Amino acid sequence: FDSANVTVVFVLGGPGAGKGTQCARLVDSFDFCHLSAGDLLRAEQDRPGSDYGHLIRTCIREGTIVPMHVTVKLLENAMRAALADRGAAEVHRAAWAAGRGRFLIDGFPRKMDQADMFEQDVCESSLVIFYTTTEDVMLRRLLKRGETSGREDDNVESIKKRFGPPVSTPRSFHSSHAARRAVTYQEQTMPVIDHYRTRGKVAEIDSSPTVDDVHAASAAVVKSLFE
Ligand code: UP5
Ligand code: MG
Image (cartoon, rainbow, N blue to C red; front, side, top):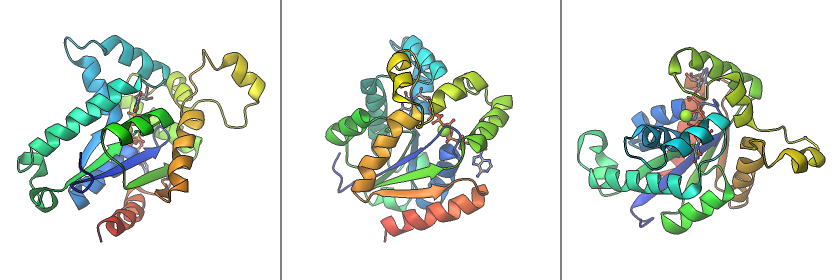
């Protein structure tokens, strides 16, 4: 993809931080195409004939990260489809009609190797929106969503695995348990944030307030990208 024609915004934050909710609002305000890596993986998992269904289901339940080539390919395909679809139902608006694709990539990259692969093979990102709140808030939101979501990972056990061990966990604990334990958000995703932070691309937004308030903060950041 030519970054001259495509704007990519990564949206990161812990499980239940509100990525999907905020992306939906940003789509309405800025004509983005919203691609959730988790949603694409769940769709691939359920696709009859997929070679990856079993692998994806296991990773999602265990809160581990699906091998990156699977996720990057799904994202790339979805981006191509959206660009080819320009002018059609979902992406009919001004920015796209003028030949510029705008993508919100939600829940990706969660690991440094994914970030490198995406930027090399697909496109550079312009901005990383990073939603932060406490694990308490995230846990409460996910358990509430779990009452109706049908998501296999909206249960206490999977949620804890998705959070990963706290950053303060002693090293000795990691070395004996890391191989078996899902070490996800804190250990793997934080280096991605740090990487983009040194490049001045991270907008950190507190996602504890109401959906409207978080949206206002998010819209202000995104607006500056297009001015
Ligand atoms: N809610 C949201 N905002 C609120 C607010 N301000 N006030 C009150 N309530 C609020 O929100 C969660 C719930 O909170 C909703 O009910 C919402 O109404 C409410 P949501 O917007 O859905 O949060 P989100 O951050 O999107 O949470 P999600 O559970 O989707 O985050 P995860 O990062 O855990 O899930 P994702 O789908 O991205 O990934 C799932 C799994 O896929 C991963 O664990 C991993 O196994 C796999 N994966 C990969 O392997 N590779 C990838 O690149 C991506 C995913
Ligand atoms: Mg989500």
